[in-house]
Amino acid sequence: MRCAWYKSLVRRQLREMVFIVLAVITRWSLAWMSPVPGNGRGLSMLYRKLIFLIIIAFSASLSTQSAIAESIERILFNGRIFTANSEQPLAQAMAIKDGYIFAVGSNEEILTYKTANTELLDLQNKWVLPGLIDAHSHAIIGALAELSPNLQDEVVDLATLKQRIEGWFKQSGHGSGQPFVVFGANPALWSDPQILADIFNKNRWKTQPLLLMGSDLHTAWANGAMLHIAGIDDAYVQNLSDHQRHIIGVTSKGSPDGVLIDAGVDLVTVHFPKPDDEMLLKAGQYAVHMNNSYRITGWMDPAANAGPGEALFSRKPASLGTGILPAYKLLAEKGQLTAHVAALLVASPLSDAADLERLDTVRQQFAAVPNLTMPGIKIFADGVLEFPAQSAALLGHYKNSGKQGEMLLTAEGLKNLVDAADEKGMLVHIHALGDRAVKQSLDAFEIARKKRNSGISHSITHLQLVDPNDYPRFAALNIMPVMQLHWAEMDNYLLDLVKPFINETDFWGQYPARSLQKNGAVIAGASDWPISTANPWEAMHHAMTREGPDGGLNKAERLDLNTMLLAYTIHAAKAAGIDDKAGSLTKGKQADFIIVDRDIFNVSYDLFKNTKVLQTYFAGKLVYSLN
Image (cartoon, rainbow, N blue to C red; front, side, top):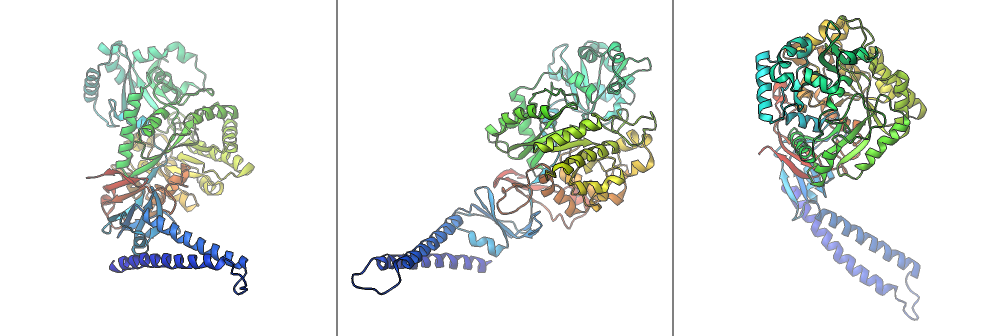
């Protein structure tokens, strides 16, 4: 270490000596260039001027280098730095200038940039990583849910359920007749909706509207008073087309039983009041702090133009709603958006090229918001696999119904929409859980790639079931799988709500991460928060072990640590369209990085899962500290 300091001192002294010599030479050159009567000796005036200009340029170069060195505000050294940069995977030290990475390298190299004004951070052999990126997180919606009555996906007995909801309602101060929403309900509750009706269609609840929002955000249960507000009754159900009937659960007599699926949920949520600016800001602050504490410095919000009081699955093509985008603007105006946010706009299933022009007007409203980008659109291809919804589109059939689930738009409509977006330079991110939805999504991307091969980082997310014949198509078409591998575990969802209803081959083939990777796909990591935890270390743990509370799920599909770290850094940044400024610790990129409390490469899986962040930096500034 003393050697590095000594070399730094010597270099500064040499610079000073060079400046003195240059000053003398410059003065001599000026005199030399003056004409001397009767003296023809020396070089021509042209050569003299050329030498003079070279001297001035060299002097300016040294002066610039000195000024750069003087402006290095922070140096991290004595560390182990995972850069996520394939050309320089590991380093010891890093220099930061004006919130950007100026240099990455060895202690000896980087400490030469130290000046009297540089802050030194001795890492004491700790690991540093790029700030993590979540390639699919409903950050503001999740925060609004967390700040509301929330069952946290917990499976509870009916007495406890009633007690909690009654308690929350009394605390809320809701007026009679005002819709009351409880978030985070485990969809297993919908297995027998009559039990819920027996509790929440009586006494106060006979006239008090109640909605239990599923933790999957695709399903819900509404009591009779809530259904009445939405106009959902026997006549409404009877008038639905065959294609629409799956969105509303019914009794054996054909009456609505309160279960709502996808567009059926929209029928109710459009009647909720939109959050005011104060609530949006509060939710935004919660989301940013939570993500920074989990080492996350960027995310892709896949449905930013939707929010409470607006349709999500059944948006109209002409919809110009701004959803939760104002929350990001409010945060940025206060200097509190300490994360990169790539906000996608949900396109209607009926959208076409003209609708994309209308969506552009929404993008333009937020184009100048710092740290917010709006790279493209999200498309819902299908729904979810779990019973009773079973709206994910399958190549096979659900055992109980013989149905195949629902595509939310036609194959031709999907192709046209993807092609139009690609032509406009928009990133396309498609929700597809069932293997039929995945196949049709790839078909749509194939058309666009053949036409122009734009190179845009399009992606398909969730990928619960994928036809093995489609594994190689991701790499061939340059389509990124954005996977929520926290779900790759055996739990009550898979055992109770999936396994009885699909064939064994499909069941054990869920979330085929390793198969996709072996076929050349580049995987990006994501949480889908609040559907599952935003904690990336837990998700990486599940991806590497494929184990859950009720056993393992096809351990042949496990991924290694290096793959997962890249999935949550440079690959997630690429999926979000922000890899030019984030996702790796590379010269010229923004200085977003984290310092962790343990050697993540040499600990057990259980210890890895509990990794804690000591500090999170965004644009070179400390935004979270454990202490």
